[in-house]
Every structure is written in structure tokens, then in C-alpha cells.
Image (cartoon, rainbow, N blue to C red; front, side, top):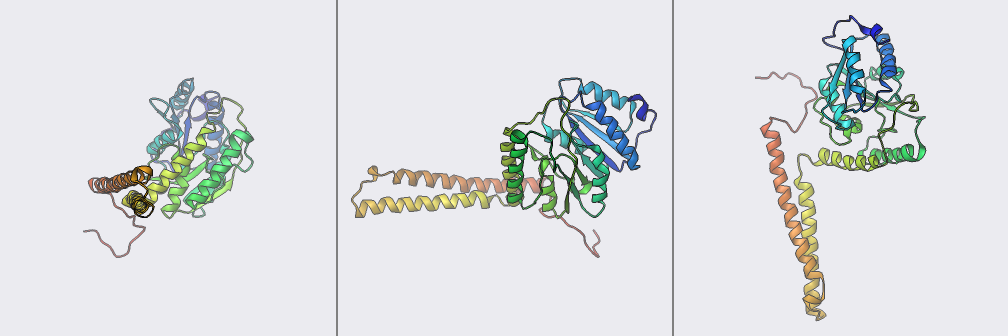
Length: 330
């Protein structure tokens, strides 16, 4: 069946659409998903490429992807050395995609490729990111849906970017909104946050979600905690990337103030209540808070030096220009 699809087609030099799918031990889903994708992408009638990323699979995923790429010149296969995780695999897809519009989805067959045209139509209304919302999610209530609902609520509240479903991998991006974004941990789900902070317009639409019929889920409850920790890191990077002294120095000054308070308390007890320094923990607390406060301030100064080295050594700017008028570069 695969041989009949795209054999003999010439490679597309500059595709309009890039569809990125990471795979990890999904040998049972590849062929059926590929057939669905081809039918959808051909119907769209725009130049496209399929970027399949094998994230260190230990089954026949690599062989199946290679077989498809051998007969379909629109398929690019990226083989990672080992299993780096979904975010790293997605980042590899972004780095190798050439399209001006990038589409991302899971390789487990639960995202429906038939939703892609609807999402592209939404993007054309002037949005920079269109995120899928698995409104009728076909997963286990206790282990998947409930933790996801809690995580989505926390992410929306903390970030200020309100989406129902950050965890849905089916998303459409304009290329310029993801250029320059580097992803770590579980941060692929936070791209809409990055986009919104850069002034991008975000849309979310309900998409069809299918139950997993083949293979096994790779996600567990521990992922919720990883996502929350990654969110805290994202918030720190956004708000304090160029001014880390505000964080470290702020904590340092707070601890120094506490150490001053405990010192005054210890002296006051000694003078007015005749309580010896060794009879109260206040002197120990004073020394602990003071030394920790000094360390925090020094860490803030070191972080400032590192940030300045980061920007100046690479010629990076701390701002982004949206547009200009009557400016000629000399």
C-alpha cells in the first residue's frame, strides 16, 4: 500500500507546510497514520513535507519510517541517537523543518489528521498559533484527564495565557513565531506561552480525539510534576532572564533582613530578659540567614555576569523590533 502513494514524486525544495511527528515505539500505528496523513495533505493542495522523528525507538519504528521515506520523497526521517523525550524530538523536527507553517502532532494515532485543514483555516484568520483542544478526550479519567485538567488550570493561571488543553500536541504554528525558541524538559507544550509573550495571537479550537487502539501510552502521573517545574522555569526565564539579580538579590536582602531581626531579638533577650545567647537559637539563625543572604546576593552578581556574557558574546539583543519606518541600515 505504501508503494502506491508517493513513488516517483520529486522532492519539494521549499514546502509551504511542514508536518512534524515524533515517534517512540509506535510501530503498530505508523502505516495507518501515514495513510491518513497523505490523504489529508494531498487534499489541501499545498506543497508539504513530513518530518518524522524517531526518538530512539527499540521496536520496528525505524525500519517502517525508513521504508516510507524510500518511496516518498516528501518524507524526512530524523533518527535520534537514543530516547531524548517528546520535547527534544519535537525540537529536532522544528530544526529540520523548512515550511513557513509548521504543524505538530503525536504519533500514537490519537490526534486526527483530518483536523489539520480546519486548523489551517483558523490560522489564516490572522493567528500565529492554533492549538487543539481535546474537548472530548478519550483517555483514562483518573490517570490522564484529571491530572491534565489540574495542570492546564495551573498553567493558565500562572502564565496568564488561558488555554483549555496545553497537553494537546496537535498545534499549528507560523514559522517566525517558533524561530529562536529552544525547548527543554517538557516545554513543547508551552510554545503558545512563548508566542503570547512575544506578542503573537493565539487561537484554540476543539479537535477530535481518538482512543488509543494500538501500542502503549508512555505517559504517567509523574509528568504533571515535571510540567509544573518546567512552567516555573519558563516563568523565571521570561521575567528574570535579563535581570537575575532581582531574584537572587531579592532573596538575599530578605534573608539579611531576617538575620538582622533575629540578631536584634537575641540582643534584646540578653539585655532585657537576661537570657543568654546560648539559651536561644536566635544567634544560630542570625548566622545562618546572614551567610545565606550574602551567598544569594553574590549568586545574583555572578548570574548578571553570565547573562551579559551570553548576550554580548553571541551578539544577541535584549529586545525585538516589530517594524520600523524610514530606517536605513548603514
